Image (cartoon, rainbow, N blue to C red; front, side):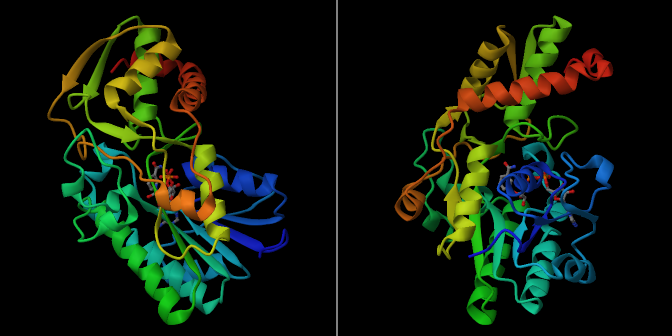
Length: 334
Ligand code: NAD
């Protein structure tokens, strides 16, 4: 087991989940946390002085070697990604994240790291199992025969295999969690990479602030998803990292909602009702997706349980603060 002085690398620490993970590790008393991201530090979502913060492009093997020096555990959360609007239109860019995981694994093997965590995604699941809004939750075996989300999902599935084979062939102890839609404060909420929970908060807040009580929804709003609050994502990731679970495992909420229901929740938090219009040709992803949590319940006796209404309340308040701190945002009703 790791002790508080071991060096832990968080790759992608300038991003949403990585930033929260650095915060959690420091709060748990880990004294040596190395935080790495390609973005200039001024663009990181959260920065902690106590961490060893470095700007490195982890697509390069040389930079991975630098990042991994002296490290005993690696959380790989670095990837080029975003919501459906991004991944449906940037497939090559998403697939290039394969270089990050490949080179980090090679550097991890050379440095003989104890554990390696890979953030995979529910986008690895076969599309033909997700054609109905009234879904049967996805269990781990449903990733094969493979027909994942084009681009982003293929990269995730390939990188899972790479983790598996580095363990089998080279003894790198890899762990893989398939995250299902994570949301919360300090996430992307604007600019094209945001996901549905943050996008809905932003749109409702803009409607409230501008008095233009309308909202545009991508698709017919009846597509279904589950959304996991960031605190559950961190708890689950750290538990999986410390566990003997060697196969990819779902890490997601099993509280299934339609996008229309998600909008209801945000409207209730905001105290307004909006006229909805539906953009049927917008990127909308699969028709329905939920996380089957039988495996995580069996292995960890735990599953994500923070209620969507509670997590969305905190997310809404945080996005409200971001928007109202930038007066120019008020003029941009969308
Ligand atoms: P994010 O975009 O907020 O964070 C990813 C970070 O990786 C960014 O800060 C980015 O700058 C960094 N990065 C990209 N390329 C890099 C490179 N070459 N070198 C170093 N850093 C680089 O995303 P997130 O929501 O925090 O997601 C973290 C991980 O979890 C990703 O692998 C993502 O695919 C996975 N995931 C997230 C979700 C979700 O809902 N957020 C769902 C499934 C899987």
